Length: 308
Image (cartoon, rainbow, N blue to C red; front, side, top):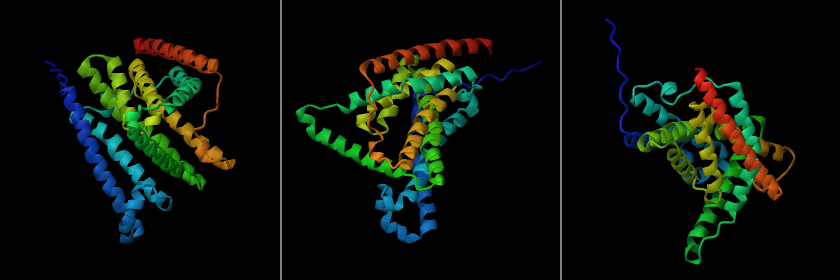
């Protein structure tokens, strides 16, 4: 007689989200503390008096700040969804669905990220024109100060002093976020919200809003939300997290490579976010072709899944 072991039923999706939050807070604290300990071991206990400068991204301690960024990213985004899968007694590749990537779908992801760039530029321009009512001017001023502070830190992080710096930046800004943030948001949050509300589209957009809000950059909220939704639909249509990770990597790696190019040609990094300036029909064409490519991706992914 053959006994088939029944699949273990998953815990409540809202409890999954609470566990994810708990694991993220715990992982961020533990790995942040680990980063501080490593920095103190390397530089000596005298660094204690400079911790405030270190944590605010002071240029003098940018290498140490990168150590904190890398380890915090691992602890906050990569390990928590892995811990959730293990809590459910499942393999990570099975729980989040890491199906073997298909060449056509990889090519379509690359095309989507390239073709959507003008449209994404338009959303950036629209978002940057955001003006709050007079009674919220204090809030608007605070938002602008946060944005300026974030920009200063970003410029410090992407400044390259050697080819090794470029590799580190690629890992810190492109590789780790592509893995960690997609595991956390699309794999963890979107998956649980889909089960909670039984609505993939609601889950995708709620996750995209959370994904954008967590970056606390108000004048980039709309484009980042749309990127998150795009990653979410790539995951939903394909049933594989690989494509969302690839799209996220392409988006971030482009920024790292663009910054590297600008420095090689003595161009100021504070001009990196300036728009190229497409005509209105360029933005429209970009949007139409991007939607068409998503439709082609969806149809192609469905055909691939039927063949499995």
